[in-house]
Image (cartoon, rainbow, N blue to C red):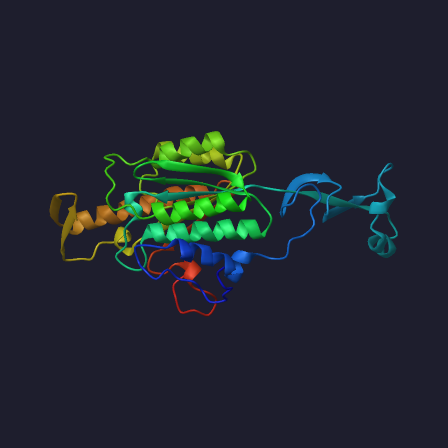
Amino acid sequence: MLAESTTRPIPKQRHQISLEELLSLRHWPPARGGRRERMAIRDGHHLSHIRGRGMEYDDVRQYQPGDDIRHLDWHLMARTGEAYTKLFREERERPVFVITDLRPTMQFATRGHFKAVLASYAASMVVWNTLAQGDRVGAHLFGADDDLLFKPTNARQRVMGLMAELAERHYQPNSERVQPISLAAALSKAERYLSSGTLVYLFSDFHDVDAAAQQHLMRLAKRCELKLVLISDPLEEQLPKGRRYRFIGRDKEVSIAAGATQQDQYQQQFAQRIAVLEQLHQLRGVEFAHWRSAAHPLFTCAGDDHEHA
C-alpha cells in the first residue's frame, strides 16, 4: 500500500506518467475531498433544483395553508411577526464523466510536460476526488488507435482498471493509425452514452474543434454540465520569430521558413480556437479553462511563483 503524502506529486518524466504516480494522487489532499455528508436520496454531494424535503436549506416563503409546521422558520417569525416556511433542495447523486484526449497531437510539448501527461494527471485527479465525494465516475479515453469507455462506477476494481489504461494509453509514439479519431466523432459517441445531469470534464488541445464538434458540445450543454479544459504548448500560440522550422515524423521531413504573414496566420488560427471555446463558455452550465504545458495549475498552489491560467 502506498503511504499517504501531503507533497504535490509531479510526474518525474516529461513524456510519461506511471501507474504508480496515478495511484499516488489519491493520497494528495485535494484529491481526497471533504467530509462526506449524509444525503437525502442517494450518496452523492450534488444538489438538484427540485424543491422538496431535502437536507439542504435553500430559501423561505410566506406560510401557506397545508405547509408542514415542522418546516416553519421560527427565528424569522420571531423577528418579523409573520410565518415563513423553509424550502429545501433535494440532494442527488450526479455521475461525473471524464473525457480525455490522448491523440498524437497531445503527445507533444516544447516546455513542461507533454499535453497527454497533463491530461492523464488531471483526469486521475477528477476520478479520485469524485470517489472521495461519494459519487460514481466514468471515463472515455480516445487516442490514435481506438477509444475506450468506462461506465460510471465507484467499484475499486473498475477504477483501478481505468488508471491502468490511462497509464498505458497516454503515450503511444508508434501508432500506425493513418487518420486519428476526430473530436467530433468522440463527442458524437458521448451524446449517446451521457445521461442528463452528468458533470463532464473534457481535457483536450481542441486542435480540431470544427463546426461539427461545436454542435455536439452545444447539444451536450443542454443536458450536462461541461468543464472544457484546453491544454496547449507555447509553440502552438506563437512561433519564434526569425527562424526556419524543421519538422520530422514517420519517414518525412519538412523545412519551413515562416514570414510575417505566416506568423500572423498561425497566431490567428490559435486565437480562433480560443474564440470558439470562449463562445461555448457563454452557454449555461459550460466552464472553460486554458492550461499551458509550461505552467500546469495542478502542479502549483497558492503562493507558488508560477503562471496560472
